[in-house]
Length: 222
Length: 383
Image (tube, rainbow over all chains, first blue to last red; front, side, top):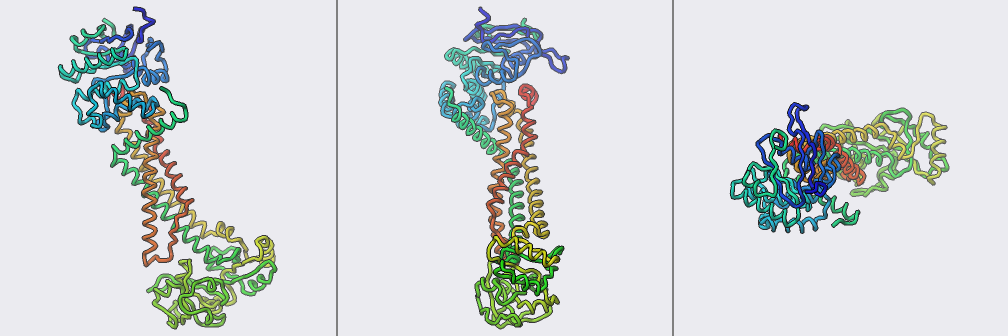
């Protein structure tokens, strides 16, 4: 694999909390090829979520570099641009705004990116159809099931047509059947849109169905 | 697809406004409480300023009475204490630049049964009578040396008097020869006496409180003013507007009205600040989600400012409507009838809207700064 063609390139990444007392990432290197789904596995506290947060630009690293689509995320402006146009993030606990409707939640990234409303609605309806939620668009999040909420989160992550999806245990709070359905949906959307995805998961069976698996232990690639 | 810049900005603003409105609707009770603070501030400000400035306007009209200048005694704190000699008034009236000069003596009489009665000592040819609408009687029997008085419409109502009635004004009784209606609440609640009778009643023989001057040409005002002040160093001659701005009673009333209104508004602003601060504290996770969805710190701040300004504008709209209702209610109250000028000045409304805008921005400063500092990863990890 040619690293220069990889949309996600991480080199010697370190991150610690509590003034350096807790080292979470200790020199992580990885690349994810274009259009592939990679899973990051490892026990709780091994640094999976922190790694994904840094790749997505939600958090900054102490040292090392992250290149997303060839762009270094070394400033807040670049991280913001990546979040708006390049990266879609899916959380384990979906992190939707409960008293907004499914549609309103999904439109938030389009407002941040300054997309016009008509264009955003067109994109939203297309995604709602693909995620099987076209009949739930006016429902509040609190009225949706766990699976529907996670599908809404996926829909929101894909609103601005990102080229990379970062998913932090997207099936972690779901039952087995729903987990597979969500994984299949993510896979379909990734393949059909040519998106690259990196996903943290505890589920080895799920991970083994992705294009590549990265094992982490104690803040390093095992 | 990217749009051309101006349209793109409009769409962005509209989407932001929609989101801000959505947030306010979601937290309806909080929004109402915030807006209520501004509403009370607006009502207090509009009512206090309107009532006090209305009173000032009425006083101004009483004093100026269709003239361009007013003459009174120098260094008096209140015009009721001013003494302008009648012979000086008559002498001043001979100046070629003066078309008309009218002396007026003011006095106030309290009565246990009736509201305060303002007495106006005027000459028979006074424009106060000729310009008024005569409801009963006529000016024929109101003579300079007569003992008959004319009542304003409201005074006639509360004194239950008509033509020929004998009324009690303080310690004396007077016969009514006419009833007039004027636009001025204080005049409408007053008693008009022949000047000599009024001087005798208030023990102010040979003097008036003020003299109002109508000039032949407005260009003459400066010359007339100089003439009066040079000839009578104890007197002051001012143009009406100049008088209105310099008269200490008016200044006190105007300053008080803006001060009381401003304090009320400040309290409203604190209510907005409190509401927005609580709103941000209660939405830390939500703001973190917005940041993860691509909102910049600036966009988060704009959203908070937008919400705050919308709350303020909502408050100012409701407050203005309530103020209209309250002022009309006050005007209709029998006890206050005529004493309140309820016209809401457009400039005052504009000032209140501007203040609500500033309050909205001021109230959102701290919450917006706090929201801008929220770190999405920390907020999502710990909230």
